[in-house]
Image (spheres, rainbow, N blue to C red):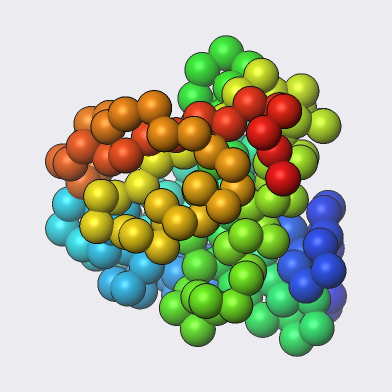
Length: 174
């Protein structure tokens, strides 16, 4: 059965999480190369993965936003997730988690640019927020390339670290 996409770019289809997507969630958030920058222990256990999937589903159902699962259009391969979560009134936090085999091929920029466009055009967001683990230089480069402006370091409880933090307003979107 073909996956239904609500948004597409040249190479990426955006879907919505559902409970039957646990194998995708486990593949992504069970990969320590993916999670090493997003939690203090560096890896998710099975309950962490279930909780994260359930949170994404709940955000989708109640707010119509989530870190949406993304797939390669040409092959239908699962790439990871990219999307939004609530931050402040009419502001959203943007994030992306990709499987390692998709790093360095422009998928992060392509997916994030589509999410930014969606946030400002469809949701009429006033501002987007993003942060990254201080050791994740690839995320820093991506956020700078997308036009995000550094606003300082902010404590991020899941890692116990101060993360470089950024904002993007509609005029600065790619």
